[in-house]
Length: 400
Ligand code: AMP
Ligand code: MG
Image (cartoon, rainbow, N blue to C red; front, side, top):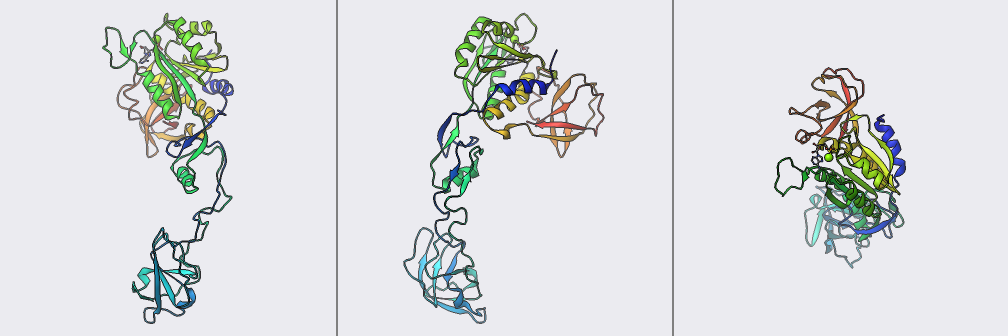
């Protein structure tokens, strides 16, 4: 009896565990990686009080009643650009020309924007009154010494990388990537780049599923095709299992003569967790365990393999790689056109969601059809035992 998708996940997920091994990566290699240790700042950022604008550093007390009609006139005793430091101490009646990012000189307590002055070089007329502290970014404005900058478990993206750079770090510890061995099967399947002979087709599953796994942040330790030879595949699985967190295969899980995965399981031997999920596509999925390694064996139909990758491998990878962001995002949306069929088994249909409305692709769809997946941005979920749905009905959609 097929089990439901949630039963399948409840069976699979407890067999997987988050990766604990870590490695160091530099700031150019951390996109999508998960931080393995807290990062705490060891200094203030910025390390010094600085000017947020181009103008003049001065003493607020010197500007009493200053205005256009009655400017405060100050001696300009120095000029500081970002990257320089002034060694002058600013006395009453003095100003220092200052550029954005330069350190506030000693003795100054505010900065006037240059647009509110006459831009004087030797002496400057200031046209406004400022309060002490105005236009000064204090030291530690972004973070101070001892601040928890990033918690262990944080998904690293560009802003996190930038924060680590601000903190002066060049590398950080992250959890290693999940390692997956991926096999496609099928005597009829040949790699692109070789000539097609009668009865053969190109291997698309290896590429579709493999690229999806790469996009989920996995490393493919093996990505190869295996003919429909149960002993050969059993041997390949046995030898790769030790170095993989997960083994994924496509094809050979149904009930035909060449559906070798059942025999492969008994040869390895692998313990079957379940066979068949009550969903379309992807019904004949077979899952098991060889020692501690999970085997997820998907149907060879290209659309089925694609959908099963989204429904099964995505949550598995989210768990193994500690990336809840990989979990499918779901929303409810309204059918733009009717769905005319009675649905006995829960169905996942590729569709495009725009402005809250779901449209199905114009071309054919089916287990063996990948062309209409291109251009789709979601899967529309039609639950089991649903009568035909008129346009305007709300359905759940899963973002791809
Ligand atoms: P199977 O699951 O092995 O019974 O295959 C189901 C259908 O998918 C058959 O029409 C196969 O030829 C096709 N198929 C299987 N594996 C692949 C593959 N790697 N790439 C493209 N099509 C495949
Ligand atoms: Mg096959």
